[in-house]
Length: 235
Image 1 (tube, rainbow, N blue to C red):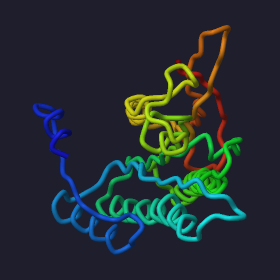
Image 2 (cartoon, rainbow, N blue to C red; image 1 turned 30 degrees about the horizontal axis):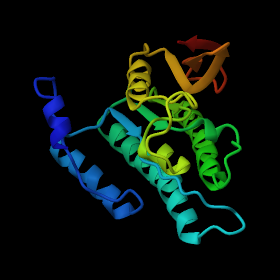
Image 3 (cartoon, rainbow, N blue to C red; image 1 turned 135 degrees about the vertical axis):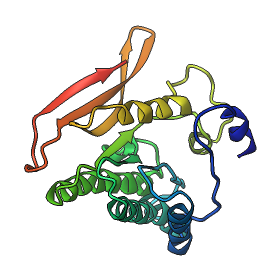
Image 4 (tube, rainbow, N blue to C red; image 1 turned 180 degrees about the vertical axis):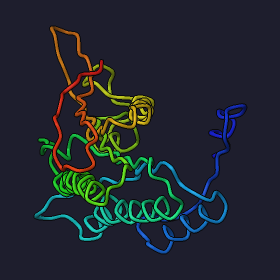
């Protein structure tokens, strides 16, 4: 927190840190109560917290499965609910809810022991679309986006491989800054654009590997559940 504060010195706004366990509903409710009392409102929610345990379906530990779903699915859902309630209460109709998903939320990879994690991220994909439909039915202009990166150079990916650092060039890794830039891009889209899904697409040409984002862009049509979809690739 101190390092982040130093990096943000001189930037607009103020950084607040709250300690809590997102697998515990009481901690989440306390955090949103603090936001309401001290900040007054919420405009953007980024559900970034997640956990991955290498755990097989035939021999995995129940505690690992429970932690994966309690954090990646239930915690995310509670945060989303509380953010929406506060947005609605304060008249914020142009808010944005962003889920940091994963390519594992769209297909099952070949790495052993990640089925439970992938299942939790598939749930996030469904929750994103379900929330979008609910917001449309409510006539709300609050937007929801799922960002699905591939492998990111974090402690999570290092935990999967068991190697620190991962040999350079073994496979392409995104940086944490790339995900932050994706969030910034989504937040910068105009109000009439519903950016529902932003994902990772790996492109290879000879020895050159390029990471691009596949973006599903929807025109915002509050009276209809459907909209014309366009695919855009961002290098």
